[in-house]
Length: 211
Length: 177
Image 1 (cartoon, rainbow over the protein chains, first blue to last red):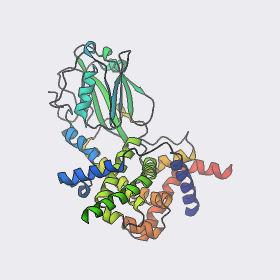
Image 2 (image 1 turned 180 degrees about the vertical axis):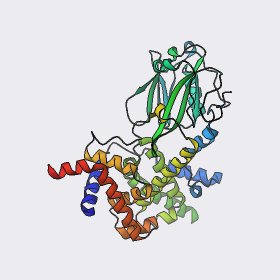
Image 3 (image 1 turned 30 degrees about the horizontal axis):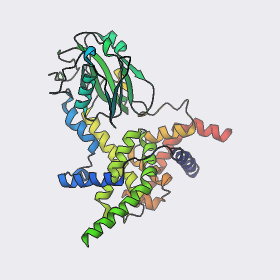
Image 4 (image 1 turned 120 degrees about the vertical axis):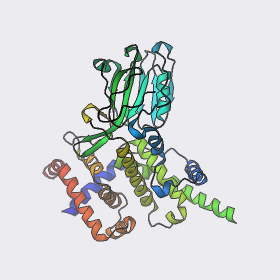
């Protein structure tokens, strides 16, 4: 019985893997070795601690459930001041389009301060928060006019319309882990609009810093 | 002499990396479902492999070492995230596409099995991955994971039971059609 099931699983998963012919590891071996060399030079015990380099940015920036833009809370220009922005990193992308919309794909929240600044450059006043989702106290209905989630795989893809953000408001993006019952279903994000400079309303947690 | 040794090891690692990177990436991608995350994990695993190359090059199945390291790194990453990012209000969240297993109702057997695989606990997923993708037998799997063959058998049995339960309708369909 188990042998039959194992054979089914083997056939199925192997064919799934073999179908991924378009998937390639782009990094050259020199880059891998340089990364290891840099880690040795810094004396980082990443191997021993089981830590991932990709988690470091998250750890530094998101701890405490506060604003990841803490101290970097960008003085976002209004949309009229926005310029064309095309920043495409492995972790996230921000691209403005000719119609004034801002296309954002978040695959991983690395370098959130830069993401905040990039969105600000694109005309989106934003505060990124982590942990508990920070609710907005007003303008709730208008969020659907500002943020549209796009279908697709490989990350959270949204379109932001900076022109739809009311004067004096800013977009609040909370990044967290979606749980369904006791099961962890993946990273997720929540969106809200908040009056600029107002303390965020984060239920069950101290107010997120909004400096 | 020492320089030559370093160069030789570097060339050896480069050959290993070039020959196995895509396969390892695809296996990890099947496990985690997010191509960027999979690439980060595999890059991390190869980095660790190079840092421990003297040990890894002697490993009976170095590719399996890399994939297992990547899967473990994924769990470390999630544990950090879980500590840092508790969220109380899932109803207000929008899941990242491709990161959560889709319901199996409208998926084919292959997709349903992949979705079910991603739901397995790490140890069960490791056992399935090593048995399926590397064709390791029970003893080799046990040695690689540092557990007894009996424990491998237990994990395999539970994993297959869970996969069967998650994909029963497709299995039945295949049998009856």
